[in-house]
Image (cartoon, rainbow, N blue to C red; front, side, top):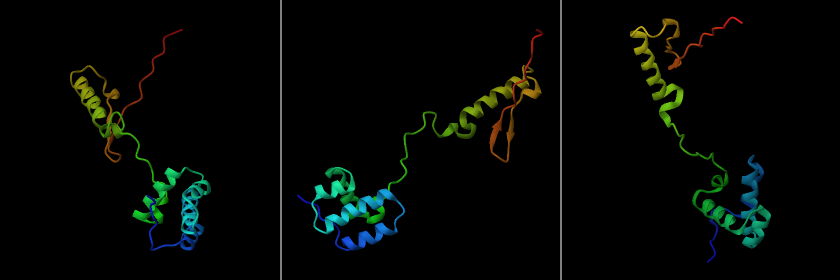
Amino acid sequence: MAIGLRSDLDGDELRRIARASKDGRQVRRLLALAAIYHGESGSEAARLGGSSLQIVRDWVLRFNELGPDALIDGKALGPEPLLGRYNKGGGMLGRLAYDHRQCEYRLGLLEPSAMPRVDQAAGHIVAPRPSQTFAPG
């Protein structure tokens, strides 16, 4: 069963929107759908759009539901980071390392110059650079 295009726009209007668009992929998709409005087959629209018939069908569904802006690619969210949101900017792991170093400092196992400090303005922990010792050589 063929899927019809929405009736509030026509092929000429899609061509006008395509001329005004700065997104090349949206332009290609709009022109493929404009060809369908002008009586071309789905296969011909797929050829014009440089894609498969199934992809053109997906464009038609998106276009019918949300209009021309639905043919603009969105930013992919991607997978959740392995360490999760707690590791950003030091986060939970940074806080645990800081607490561990605080304990070492209070027990006298750590020099005061080796203590990390909390940068209040940036909201994260700043670790000191390790001191370098050179063996005589």
